[in-house]
Length: 510
Image (cartoon, rainbow, N blue to C red; front, side, top):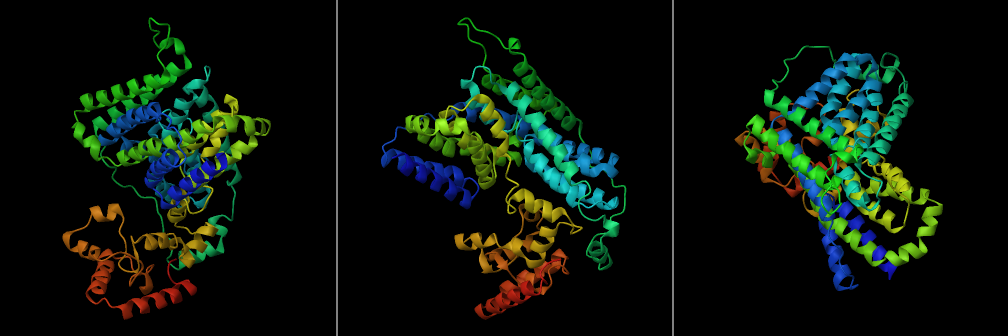
């Protein structure tokens, strides 16, 4: 029965991963239905402790973002980077690590990538060098930060080990990640030709395909006092949590002899930090519900409630089999488990989901704590597969076109292929209007919304009309509106045929 249930579990995870987003958690619910009603497996307890910690951390982080605190931190990062332009390849990855570590989300690196690209070009440095390592370092920072979903999750699971707490996890994760970042930065420090010696890059400049970056002074966005205060409060709360983890004597002991658990302390400190930010900054607490970070945090919570519950149920039902048949093998060859962590991290593209899948399995295998914590570092492998959002972002922001795979992907329009999945799901059609981003839509005037009256397409009039040469937004909108007015099946067929021609001649994008 073990292998049947295991196959079902893997199919559920793969299915949820391919669908993407919150469906991974929903798939966990479908798996629970199968396990309970078909296999007659007794459900385990949901990971309440992990969920409660996540909610507390998310509340504090969202409160800081509501005051403009995250924007302030990005601005500080840019200042640091511009003070060390010649060493951007070494400095940028550590800045990316620091700010991800402090903000609790790797998504903040997206705000830094255009800055890194610009500074690199200003100083004649290949952007691929600092950008590639910065992406990796930002993901590594998700392990060890006391406020990331992955770290919170492993802290919750490792409470069964008496001597393992937040402090010990940080003492392993932080040095390991920083050493790895340094090695990675040094490995690409002289990668490729210098821009001044690169004939292909020089030709792109001559053809006007690369923006001529010149140092310029731009007015900084005004930072409010409440943003600075919220960041200070948030960082102080992180320090307090870390200190209490390092020095257990600082946590109160109760009359029954038990001591306040770190999991409970994290929740208390985070909620108190959020409350202080609201009181001091005088923001409307309802504004917290509107910040973008809430969406990311909510995903982590429902993932824990859905998929993690399923994994725990499977492990609980098969504990005897796992212990008797697999424990000896993985204890003798722990690299087998660590490789599994790496592969799951690459497939799920999420440290949190990987943690929630693999740590319960490690515990069931009776692996020692040092193997579990050390191997956990492999969960930050979501940059390993080139179609991950981190890799795509890096390719997009390297405007110099120095990344070979990026040049090939953009030149051949292969970056559009993942959208075929959206076509199959019915979210898009083969031919239609250009799908806008959320940021673009928020800036729409009323007449721009006319282009949304038709299902967006994988290709369209703009794409086959020399998209790299048409940058005026109003012209793109005009094309879409004209297409909607004059739509016909015959015209769609012509656009598809022309798309094939454009791709074969590499005329789609430059």
